[in-house]
Amino acid sequence: MSRRDTQRLRPACSVPDGFLCAPQRTLRLCVIFYLCLCALPCLAQPRQLTYESAMAAGAQAFRENRFAEAEKSLKEAVEISSKYPRGDDRHITALVNLGALYHKQQRWKDAEFQYQRALILQQTTHGSDYPGLAVTLDNIANLYLQQGRHAEAEEHFARALRIAEKALGPEHAGVTQLLVSLADMKRVQGKFTQAEPLYRSALANWEKSQGSDPLDIARVLNNLGTVYRALDDPTQAELMFTRAISLDERALGRLHMRLLGSLNNLAELYQSLARYVEAEQTYRRALEVADSNYDPEDPAFVPLLNNLSALYHEQAKYAEAEQAYARLVGIRRKQLGPDHAEMALVFNNLGGLQHRQGKFAEAEVAYRRALAVDERALGSEHLTVAKDLDDLATVLSDQDRYAEAEPVVRRAMEMRQKLLGPQHADLIPTLENYAAVLHRVGKSDRAKTYEAYARDLRTLYKKSK
Image (tube, rainbow, N blue to C red; front, side, top):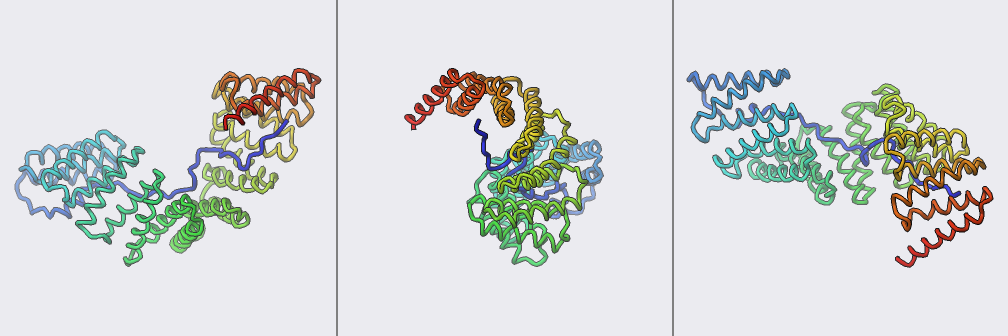
């Protein structure tokens, strides 16, 4: 029976392609921005003082996470300011800050409603190029970002950037942050050629500015590295990752947890280039950082251990791969429990490594665990279950236990026939495996029938190409 020869372990958990440093955005209570921007006059009338006291109380409660009190005060400010003459920016300020409060609480619809009210008032009062619009648009864009509404977030970041560049100039700090935000949105949508010049412009601004935060620069360098890797420019990708690592090390020390993202990205790059020694050294360095910041069984180790195990697997260093992966298994088992649906893939990967080393009994145990978990999670008839059955049948055959393997591989074959149809290309390997087992158990006449079935399918697919 043929054994599938995979080049890389399947990921044991949902891990993005590379660690991406997300923008370290903090939600801003926009009253501070607007008070600075609008240069409000000194107010003496009781109603105006009530507005100011409501806003101040709302801001204080917001900072202290007393959200119910903050909402009450900000609603009072909205109500009071709604009676001011049309065009008074204090009403807009109150709406934006009430939206910011809902945003902080992840009350998405409420936040969007208040932000949009403010946006409409700003546009009708001040026109479409009003600088204050950039702040509201930025808030709305971040709201969409947190909901995964990337296309809408991109649209609002782009508009905020155009307004801010016109009002503040192309090198202003606020413009630079909007460049980064827009680049991030382009990147997460796979628009890498559009993201690259935006990141470059942001870096150029920071290089001209004294006092730029090196951590901001390191984050953008790391994300730009992922862009270059996606654009198949490994030289530039390596340069960006190494510069990001260097800046983070100088600012925070060589064992700070922020280094994990860039180190993992650099190691993955080396691995993709078959620079295995450098990849292993970099993964080991990332594990050293993780060891210094997390408990030994923290889930933060999972992607690193998975990648290191895959690196050894690619080099046919199966013992080393199993050692790294066994630690991952222990972490995931503790994190999820042995019967969790995600454990099926973990057990299957472990079984594959043991199988490669000829540890057939151990591999059989792991494959049976994977099968049991998948059957509970997916039901008795699923293509993933059929794949588990294939693996189990293979390891049984490798132990000359063909009588036990026969019903297992037959079940996998019949399952694929039912789920895919009798003429699907994916049936061919299963038919050939079943025929091989039938020969071994003395059922050669029947085996020839399935060999012919497989040949017919191969002929059919050759003609269709």
